[in-house]
Image 1 (tube, rainbow, N blue to C red):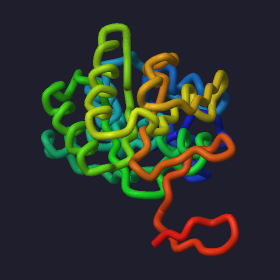
Image 2 (cartoon, one colour):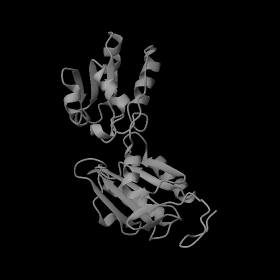
Image 3 (tube, rainbow, N blue to C red):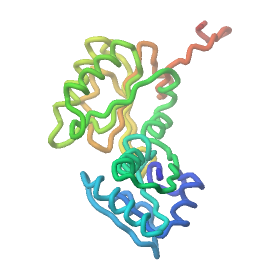
Image 4 (cartoon, rainbow, N blue to C red):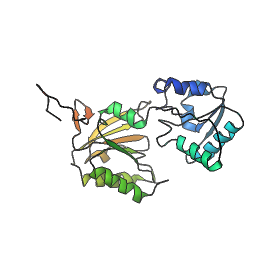
Length: 246
């Protein structure tokens, strides 16, 4: 299940109900901390970063023992989350269990809402983390998205060990896009300490970028108006003050 950004106000009623109805809650420790009183009196199995496989194994084991288990992801469990891993392990272990995937507000949708409407047209989502995907593959995907003029959403853009990757990404985009292409950066979207910045492709690296930041790079038609980043869908607009678009 997905808990969205982490506050109960941005969790779906189905997600809250799933937690309340579960006996065991499994997840990354910082995500579980955001649930507060929702996990009181529950059996909680938490662990750290890079321990996704053991978490999924624990969850499957608890479910096989007859318990109702909630596996928690931030955002949406099917987008860089735990849903795929749990199902993959069940397939490999030849395990049959009833599984419900409960969607949640994603980092990209939370960031887009804070920026305005940058995802109104086709977009690509790419993680810059090379822990599970080689940088060569990531670079090829960045090139393809840039050539195709997709709006590009970047997850996991920079860490202490990967600070150069975001620079390489920016340089790839600059080969195909104008230097003044709008770039939106949202850190801690819809959470305490939220920071929203709209910059340009040329100047984006002048701002703080880390693993808590979601970046949205506009396409050739994206513009900024009244502090809002907008990618036109292509509707025909006529009349005073409006550009005609098809």
